[in-house]
Amino acid sequence: MQPEPPQEPNDDPADSALGEGVPPDRLPSVRSGDIPAATASRLGLYLRELQHFLRGGTETIKSNALGRRLGLSDSQIRRDLALFGEFGKRGVGYNVAGLVGALRQALGTDGQWNTVLVGLGNLGNALVRYRGFEQQGFSLQAIFELDSAKVGATIEGVPVHDVADLERILPTLKTQMAILAVPAAPAQALAARLADLGISGILNFAPVSLSLRKDVATVDVDLAVELQRLAFAVVNSDR
Image 1 (cartoon, rainbow, N blue to C red):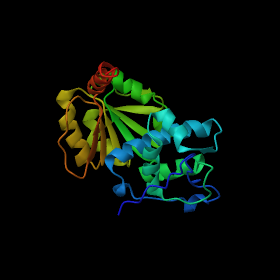
Image 2 (cartoon, one colour):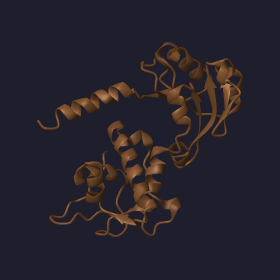
Image 3 (cartoon, rainbow, N blue to C red):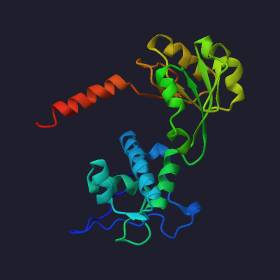
Image 4 (cartoon, rainbow, N blue to C red):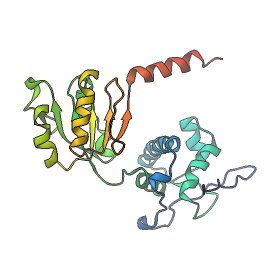
């Protein structure tokens, strides 16, 4: 049964103070499997913005302030956050630190995910240097590269291995996730090798859809498609 959204007063929405005065081990939790995919994508946006607020010293925030930052309605935010239940004082907004903790727990980023990168082209080089992965609990353990001229280097403290050594090295790293940043041609074969070696999730930047076992989660990030979506939004912004 889906939880009902909180009641909305006529004037000022009275969001629950999520996490206020509640020990960290008693934060509300919701199983990731109970979260619809569309809602999960929005929860990631909420977490990103709430972490910005937290770093800026904000202790409580109401749904309308969060909505303005993200271009979402107050009611949409309250419906999404109702998954975590309501408790604490009303009328003061969501406790930012408590909500960050609950969202990280629901999204599975409250621990550490060991990750590898396959592909060290222009995109791969940029990804290695992206600080956000470590901040969100994704620890890059190794890089695997097709170009032997790049093998043996260390970038941002991460060693570069020959992709031919994938079967020998990957099992020693206790890695759950992989980032695939290679051209379309080798992507499927490399993804299949990763899956056979126990990788349970692949972030795929290759411009091709992967076909893998159902127990291997994949998320495709096609930058050209995202630019097409942006172009569509621009073209239709005044209509």
